[in-house]
Length: 310
Ligand SMILES: CCCCCCCC(=O)CC(=O)SCCNC(=O)CCNC(=O)[C@H](O)C(C)(C)COP(=O)(O)OP(=O)(O)OC[C@H]1O[C@@H](n2cnc3c(N)ncnc32)[C@H](O)[C@@H]1OP(=O)(O)O
Ligand SMILES: NC(=O)C1=CN([C@@H]2O[C@H](COP(=O)(O)OP(=O)(O)OC[C@H]3O[C@@H](n4cnc5c(N)ncnc54)[C@H](O)[C@@H]3O)[C@@H](O)[C@H]2O)C=CC1
Image (cartoon, rainbow, N blue to C red):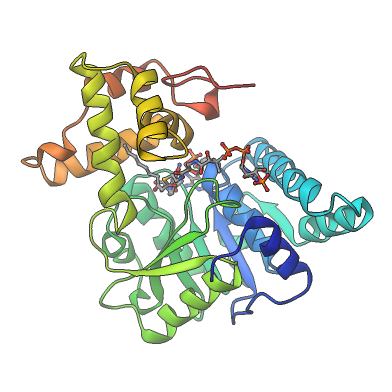
């Protein structure tokens, strides 16, 4: 059952959110998604280790988690700021950071990978985690577009492998796609579903098909918006206004591309184009490529199709 964010935090504080067998969670990648996943996992009573490549990156992840938590707490505890402070301190005490993935998975029940959208990099990571993690540890990838099985083959625990695909911003978006490959055991899949529910998410079961459910529809839509601008048919501003006011979307496709990250969008579309070269829905975009080459990666760097609001 879906919960608005306030009710969700309240239900966690009062202990009414469903518990799962998974208590210790390692999240690899402390960017946009990893930081959000870490925040919500810690907010729902899990012990979280967040891993990234350097201490500096992890400092930024920690500060973005604190900012997001402050937003949540400010509203949830408007009438009881002391309780809000206590909640925030408890959440932060359940979250630690680490730069060594092997050390971070030593007592982990579940590893969620949220690193760069690149198959070879993800496989290399999982192959090394497979050697370092205990036998019972479940592995999951938050990939947007790479088949889960292509990543899982890097390990010898395909029965304990699945996909957990979160949505940005993780503290707000209620959906979690839970993906199984043919090798995923029922026990693993049920544990992943229960974990998603314990995080307060509404889960949908997905097969390991390109883009699962949401991105199979969202990616062609966003790319067609970019192509519309390339053809000179409309400006990004007009497309965004049209889709917000005419279709009721909270963000237009260009605002959303900036929010997701243009580099991530490019990784996705390039990957699908290489795999399905004859599908025009997955054609790469010269405009997107140009922005990425110029370093305009979206809100995370301050500029994409738009300049980010301060
Ligand atoms: C071409 C390739 C494409 C590939 C795509 C791949 C990506 C993926 O694999 C999958 C994805 O994630 S796709 C992206 C999915 N996300 C969306 O569609 C977000 C759309 N935007 C929104 O929902 C709202 O603008 C949003 C919720 C973001 C902001 O809402 P508002 O505009 O109304 O702004 P606010 O009033 O500031 O926020 C509303 C409530 O949410 C709280 N909030 C927002 N951001 C937060 C954050 N980061 N942390 C904590 N709380 C946050 C905000 O405080 C407010 O709360 P309430 O006052 O209680 O409602
Ligand atoms: N941006 C979005 O809206 C969404 C992205 N995703 C997926 O989540 C994953 C991460 O995406 P974002 O968080 O947006 O990317 P991001 O670029 O914000 O963060 C990626 C992080 O991973 C770290 N990293 C890279 N290689 C690493 C390694 N070997 N070990 C440890 N850390 C490493 C980077 O330093 C960076 O901090 C991708 O697979 C993406 O497709 C899924 C849902 C939504």
